[in-house]
Image (tube, rainbow over all chains, first blue to last red):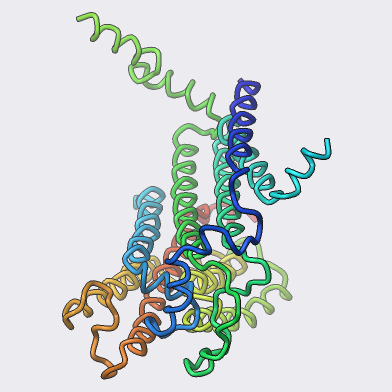
Length: 91
Length: 151
Length: 151
């Protein structure tokens, strides 16, 4: 069982290493993710459109605001689920 | 031999994350203890977070906070500063929160399982389950499926 | 008084340091727009302050500061603040969470969205701190009264 698990894990790791050969090098400024039009748009227009200097906050609360609303709902739901699961029954 | 070392050195960050991910994956599928499974899942998640954050990095780049401070007029003149990619940071901020939520719910479920069965070992729980409710055990379910398919 | 008392040094230091941790948490939440920080991080720091207090002085003392009912009310209040901010934008003629549509400051949508982002971060912070505290209080074991009588 443990041998099978180790085999599966090593195979998965080897596949990821093989696939990772095409990824850009560490800190490469010409990587596709950095040169993408959206990234440059966010860096240039975060301040004029959102009025905040922290680009991550501008992304989180403005461009991806709907996603962050869902995220807050997720953490709220998790809290309520833990309360329901572990509520001490009143005797 | 040196060829392999060159390949490792060129993208050493990915090797680190794949190793970390393998540790977490192994803990998830090979350990019988439920808490160890949760720890494995967290290691796995951390590997994914680090992978994304390393994709965001740019050599000599600064944090994606506009240089110049609070006022909009001060931030204008620093156009030649290189910023790291803000998009993966934002994605991973979301993912960390979801990871915390899932870990909390999983730990709560484990506490309930411990209260019911008195153990967090998978074998003990399955054996106790078979004893308590034989009609829900894996063997009985397979037999039930076989009977249904015969009809 | 709960069964095991921490030493007087730890209790004194925690009593002094908790207000400063809370102040730092408020700083992190309000600083999210112009520096490192944000609602999630600040909420977790604020929750950690109350959790530290409850760890040292006992769950009962911690629940006096932050009762279960207050926890639930705060958790839903934060989410409501966020959703209400989005709905205000609809009422003012924009789309959901389109901050610039709110005519708070005329002819300056960026400035309006800056303040509304702060409001949203406060909502996130309130939800996160309430959920973190309720997670700790619910996962921690119940305080057993009879065992304390023996000691």
